[in-house]
Amino acid sequence: MKPVFESGPPPSRVRSHLSVSEKLNRLLKPRPNARIAYREPSRPTVAGVVSQLRGQEIASLAKV
Image (cartoon, rainbow, N blue to C red; front, side):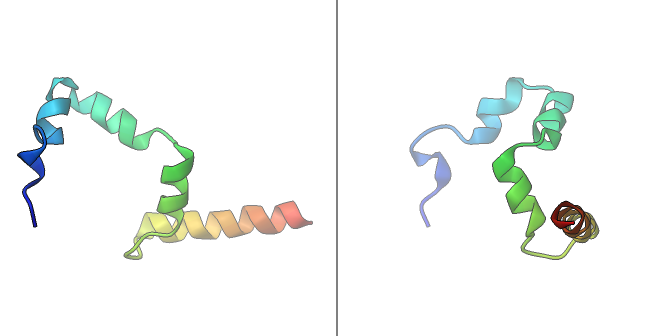
């Protein structure tokens, strides 16, 4: 594996000017692609399972 910082500085240095709250807001901000990836996590997490169940409930309500 090649080191990531060969082509440029690591992303942690690039985003170091952002504050912690801004990083958290960006992580928590609902993006469509992030929502789809969050609905099917690689490892089953409590939040992932809860969001899956909520999504199934909403889907079943929408069908009726």
